[in-house]
Amino acid sequence: MIPLASPNPSFSITDFWRWWVVHLWVEWAFELFTAAVTGYFLMALGLVSRQLVERAVLFEWILILLSGILGTGHHMYWVGEPDLWIGVGSMFSFLEVLPLFLLVLEAIDQRRHIAEQKDFPYRLAYLYILGSAFWNFVGAGVFGGGTLNAPLVNYYEHGTFLTLNHAHTAMFGAFGLLAIGLLYMALRYLNGNRPWSDRTGVWAFWLYNIGMVMWIVLNFYPIGWPQLEAVYTHGYAYARSMQFYNTTLFWQWMRMPGDIVFSAGALLMAWDFIYKLWRQRQSATASVVSTAVPVSKNP
Image (tube, rainbow, N blue to C red):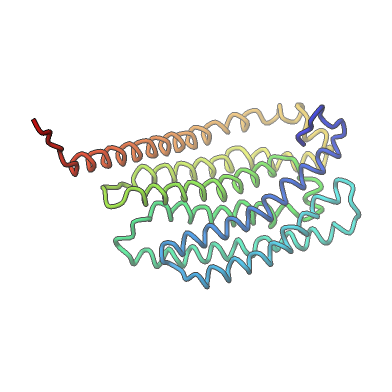
């Protein structure tokens, strides 16, 4: 994948290792990281006990060892591995939905507790964590393991716009929103008792999510389903050719509205970060000046 001299001339070998890296990273290491970080976030805010978090992470670990590693078999058969991987990969890849579903249930339950606390200071950070849990279930679970990983479907669908749909919603929705939520948690902690507003961050959150939904409705599905039908009727090579893509030019351009909305969310978020850091620095400087004691000089 990162050759020291020249690229490997075999696409099969390169693709084999690419799928190992991608799926062992995402479906094993990063899923466990997501569960651990989300649990730590809830524990740090006093919403769940440490014992509950440890049990949840251990349960996630057990499921990921099964679904994350053995579930990669839904790719292994198609790059030359034995046909044993067809059944193993299909069965265990569907188990990936279970820990994601449990994360969503936990997030919804904790959101109810937060609603009872009127002075809860980390509402914005938790909003992003809740969005991460939702897209973790929908993007990685439903769009990925739940619908695309069955061998017969994956054989025809792999590499089409339906794969892009799974990749975009899972990668940014699950992991991107999680990272932004942690950033907002750190910013809110550093802000202390100084004035704080969630408004810009909330706008950025909804623009991100609306942009992703627009991608699905206006780009991924309108191209992905005809592309899947083209694979069935004309073959995979045609469905990935310019001849096919020239029939979808309108829907290719319809990616732009979602891009604009998503980019607006990114710009709002960047401005919110810069403004909040500038205000914190300004407040800290003013506090130092006001508490400074002048030193008198002897004549």
